[in-house]
Amino acid sequence: MDKNTLQNLREDYRKSTLEEKNASENPFTQFSNWFKEALNAEIPEPNAMVVATVNKEGFPSARVVLLKGFDEKGFIFYTNYNSQKGQDLLDNPQCAVVFNWLELERQIRIEGIAEKLSPEESTAYFHKRPKKSQIGAWASPQSQVIETRDILDNNLKNLNAKYVDSESLPRPSHWGGFRIKATRIEFWQGRSSRLHDRLNYEKNANNSWKRTRLAP
Ligand SMILES: Cc1cc2nc3c(=O)[nH]c(=O)nc-3n(C[C@H](O)[C@H](O)[C@H](O)COP(=O)(O)O)c2cc1C
Figure 1: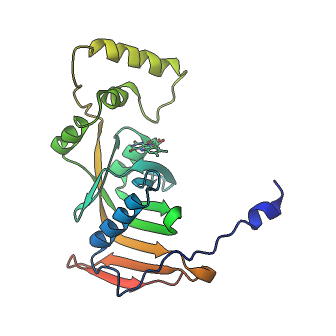
Figure 2 (figure 1 turned 135 degrees about the vertical axis):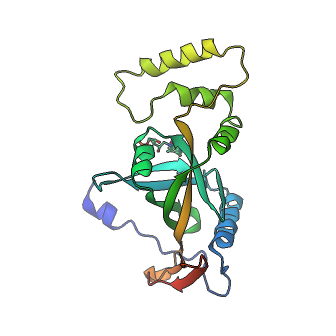
């Protein structure tokens, strides 16, 4: 591809604005409002978010996961605790999240501390998942090297046979949720001429939130 093609890709953002007078003082209310708007806009998988973790050596990595719940306590996703992200978060719970809703010219950035959900919370959600997904959680040693695709297909076949008469499977102890307790949440609305709106909420020592505007 010639370099001009990439260098000329450019959008001017004009869809909306983010003003102090219209934004909530509470970042969770603001998140909830924007999430509803993302749902209404029917953007594909609005709950897909990038989670960045840092390993023991201080090296970062990032991947997409699905948000499965949020409230004032935090943002929840589910995964394999033995995966790379799982191990990273157990070693170093500091992490960052990005939602990128291009259709709305919006980005949300969250930083915080991840903690494992209680086994009861993880089990309750595991059993809400379709049986196929429950089998998948058992079948895949997430983030491990596997010799061939056949390993997964064989695991699947064996699990299907083992649980043929069961409606659901037990939750693997290595599978469950993390709750990311936010310490910073930033809402970014694209504006014209690269003069975007950024409202940033930071948690104070007394657990209240301080809102500031950041330069784009
Ligand atoms: C749209 C989308 C949603 C995903 N949702 C999840 C999820 O909720 N949990 C998960 O463990 N992996 C999910 N993945 C897969 C991860 O991106 C990643 O490949 C996997 O978790 C292994 O990451 P790790 O080796 O860094 O731990 C999703 C991928 C995509 C593209």
